Image (cartoon, rainbow, N blue to C red; front, side):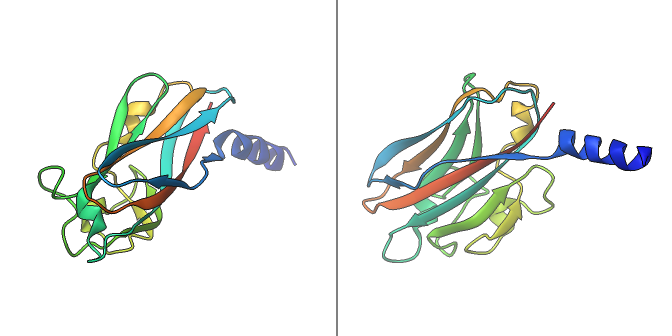
Length: 165
């Protein structure tokens, strides 16, 4: 019985809490910030982010014109991924499509985001490490930044999945 209670107590400390944004439209040739206010408290021990992004580029190559970053309330940011029109190698190229679908950016994943296949469903390592957020408070307004450098628009929503102590 003690072992069961200890396991139950431990799992309550290690479970992730999810915070989701609403679907937001990003416009052509724009920098779009999507706010996600979090009022809960706790110190981050692990943070992952799920992104659903649909670009309306007619040639199914929208990701090559996109940069996606997560910004913390405390001023630091992590680039999740970028296209070949927005940065150097590695990157999303012309064959990587328009979509991120149930794409989870997780430092513990074994596959880099650029090594995946459209629509990138599943878990991938981001371009930069999310561990830069470890030790910060979860409290505040988080932002997803979408830099779209083409004349087509799209939609995006995201979920911050965080373990705190």
